[in-house]
Structure formats: C-alpha cells, structure tokens
Image 1 (cartoon, rainbow, N blue to C red):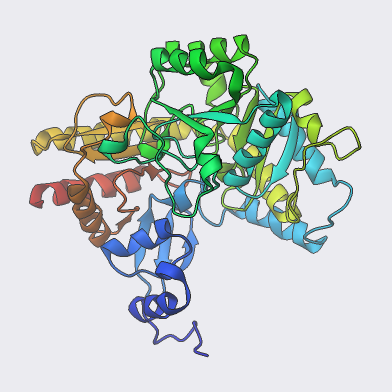
Image 2: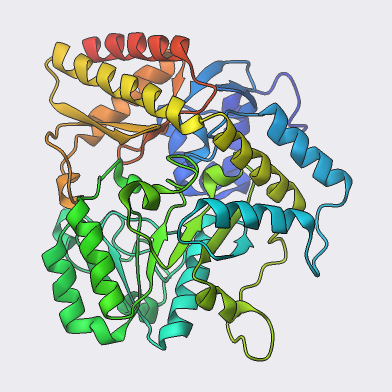
Length: 437
C-alpha cells in the first residue's frame, strides 16, 4: 500500500489512485465535478484558503457546498469539538447536556421549532420530516417543486434538474429509485400559485406534505415572490397538510432564525444542516411539538427516527459554538454587505465586457449565469444558461487562485473569513477571465 503522505505524490497520481478505488475518484459525483477544471487533491484548509497536496493555494468559494459559514478550521468551533471528544464521542443512550443546549438554541431562534430531533445530514432531516408528516396525515403523496433539492433519498430526488423536454412531469434524478416513491411525488413549478392550487384541487386530500427550499439555491437562486409563500401557507393550512421548509442551505447561513423569519411565513417542520455546524456532520428536523412527539419512542409514539451517530458530541459542540458566534458577531449582517458587493462588482463586469448574463443570489450566496437575463422566477428560467461558458469561467478563475465548483447550476458561498482583499482579488481575476473568454 502506498503512503498518501509521500511528498513526491502529486494531484494526478492521487486522483488516479482514487479512481481505482472510489467511483469517479471522489465521494459523490458532485465532488468529482471538480476534476472538470483539472485534477485536485486537498491537504488542508484554513479560514478562506484551501491548500492542495502540491502546496497550491486557492481562495475557497465552494466551502463544502456551503457549510463553512465562519471559515475553515475556526479556532473556537474546533476547540469546542476537541473538548467534546475528550469526554467521549458518542454515548448512544439517554441524553446529554449538549443535546439540550443546542435544542434550546434552535427552539429560541427558529420560529417554527418547538421540538428537535438531531441527525447527521440534510438528507436524513428531510427524510425524517416526510415520515413524520405521513404518519400525522395518514397520506403518502408529497408535493415538491422543480429545481428544489432535498437530498438523495427516493422520497424527493425527483425533478431537481429535469431536461427541458421533461419539465412539468416527474423526472427521477437517479437510476435505481423505487417507482412507488416516484409515483407518490408530485411536482409543481416554483413561484406559481395557480399551479399550486391546481395540485390541491386534484390531490389535496391525498397529500402528506409539501416540501420546498424557500429559496431554491440548488439552481443558483430563485427568490420567492411574497404572494407565493403566503398562498402556500394558506392552502396547506386549509387542507391540514404539513408544510416543510428545507432550510439546509439557508438556515444559519442567511439568518440564525431562518429565512422563514425573513419572509414571515412559518412552516410546520424545518430541516437544518450545513452551516449549523460549520462543516461538522450535524443536522436537525424541528417543528410543531405534536408532529415531533410522534417519534418519542414509547408505546404511543409510532414513528421511528433513528441513527447510531445522531447527537454525536463533536457535532453538537460545533453547532453550539457556531450558533453562538453567528448570533454574537452578526455574521449575517457582515456577509450580506459583502455579498452585495460581490454581486454588484460582477454585474458591472458583465456590463463592461458586454457579456450576456446575470448575477443572482441572496446574502452570502451568489452565482454567475451566462447566456440568460432577467430575474429568474422558476426552474424554466434557469434552463438555457450557457454551461460551457461557465465551465470555462471556472477554469480561468481556478488558474488565478479562485476555487468554486464548475457546475453551472450551483453557487458561490462566502464565509466570515472572506474580506476586502478577497473581494478585490476575485473581481480582478474575473475581469481578466471575462476579457479573454
């Protein structure tokens, strides 16, 4: 067996070895997409910087698909996790002070949350939320929206990125999905109250839940129109159908209270993960006490929510420290201002270079979309973007020390460790890339 710490090993050799052992050479196909701009193997990360095994340094705008809201290797978060490890990583029975402390913070901050169940990933959280809703209603069908991603499981991995000729119908995103799960997933366009009401007229008595990203960041950024979210809340309440907000991306990145507080629409269940722990594996489903109480584990509580590693101490310690830092230091206020400056600067560059495109985003998230214009409202407004130009842009930016995924439907993220110097460096690099491509 070769030693991965061999100083003579470079990215190409490591990636070749990885491809022999790991499908695609990375953990998930989405991670493997980084290779579209050249082989890469990382050795360390600190604040806003990623360092490869060959000592190349990049400013990181990927941030692990968004969890790193404070910056890599944040001293206080990592010290909290290390201290938790010293007391044992996992007990697996009863409760711990950390469970209670983090649950109390979620209840105090997130308007919809009265009780909490911890888990390890956003996919687990949405899976549990749908099971709770199905148990409460006795129904099986779930309504989701095109362009919203809620995890890898069969319940909802439908119509996230349907091709143009499959828009408006169920489109399974993976081979091997259970047909019954796909058949029980209904799909509607985002930001379309009329289509929403059509679904409820036909299937309202069969629905177990409606789930959505209140801001669909899985396709860059679709900002919800106020009347859409308000009508969604009215219709679900009138039919007694639980409304689930997937705030896996937005929660604790856009606000410690969730965008549900920003938009003034309160769901029945909320899923959080990613920025909750600044990179540590921790997630939660929270919401109405009567829905969560179904998982109580006694003879009258019939919903199974399980997971050997749920509530692990390092993740909870990281979550407690991350939440406290976000609140105490007004992280979102800083990131909103910085995000506005990135978006404004990129928009000016597109205009200066007469390039057809737009910059979308919200607070600490932004995305450049070439070949399209106007404010996107639905998934169809994202179709037709110039994928090859974005990949060329990503490659050119990587050559200049700026790292983000070359997937044209994804997004840039900012962290509390990004500053004025990073902004200037990014915009200078973008100016050079846009001038030559």
